Image (cartoon, rainbow, N blue to C red):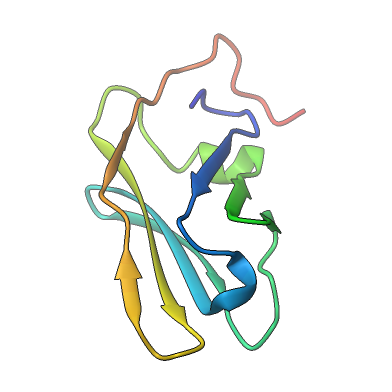
Length: 104
């Protein structure tokens, strides 16, 4: 991801998103943690579903939370309507600076 942009992360699941009661996507770098949590039928800002895909688009401000060059990870956890809890592996996210990090 480039700081001060609106990066999109897509998770492709083995199940349809309609079978999920909750979805929690976490971006983590050191003490900084950004969570996008779908629950009670309400999508958080920046999260959309498309069949088996969970798509998360960060804002410019959210991308500025993460420092360039530090290890950053993204992970999806979910709870199915049947009550099973699942998780993806932790995906590394490379964070790059922009020459100008002013919010556009």
